[in-house]
Amino acid sequence: MAVSVATLWHTPGSARAVDSPALTNPVGIRQWLSRMTLSDRRGLNGHADTQALLGDRVIVVARSGAWVKVVVPEQPTPLDARGYPGWMPAVQLTAVRPVASTWVVTVVVRTTYLRTDNASATPVTEISFGTRLPRVGVTGGWVRVATPTGRVLRLAASAVVVRAPGAAALPRTGSDVVRAAQMFNGLPYLWAGRSGFGFDCSGLTSLVLRAHGVIAPRDADAQAVKGTKVSTSALRPGDLLFYATRGYVHHVSIYAGGGRMVQSPNTGSSVQTIAMSTPSYARELVGARRFI
Image (tube, rainbow, N blue to C red; front, side, top):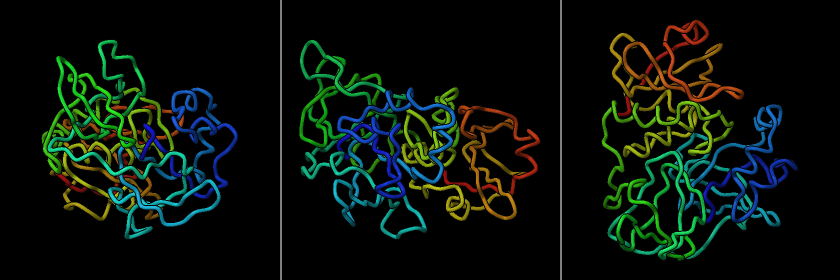
């Protein structure tokens, strides 16, 4: 993926006029979010399906004009055994072979800037929590990384962690999962969102878990049958809580301990930590799963 956040659409015709900043390279993610009204955000339901981050690997499976259909292997789903499917503008992809490195840099703050690799460190691109890029060097308080197009830029060392390829960026404990999720408290909900610019419910849980070394399904209903089933009377921080209407799981949150949960609830709301006993959620709670 060659842009900071790529939105995957249900069909090549699903994007609306208001979505044009989300279709470019570089992507205008902040412009897109600020342009959408509440009604526009609600209208993403049925149009956008998920998002992928700068450097994420995708597989192209079809083409239609300037659009490509891809699957995202690190977003498991029953929809396609190869990964989560969706359509995106081909201009947001790169076929450049990734730079080989013995170290991987992962962003562990909401968002941060890639900057020019010189003394001025001029901001170039704002990128999300969970973005992973190969490290090519260190200088002062900066980490030098290679972008998917091969350009070398730098990131503030305070905004990232450096690990061996395949290692979890953050400690694999429930309390650390909660801490990472709560970092986004106050961030507005975004249907199909899976980045530090905005999350839907399962976008939050799946990306936070990925940063802790766990690859979980992308959507709430698929997450609800993975992991280890646990009783809601024996919850530990980091467990996922699932909610259903007429047997269909439509929402997921993260147990935060002390009878509270972290969630990205719905369009018009923001990531929040609230009591599990909140009536609108307590009556729909159908189970819990442990991934950590």
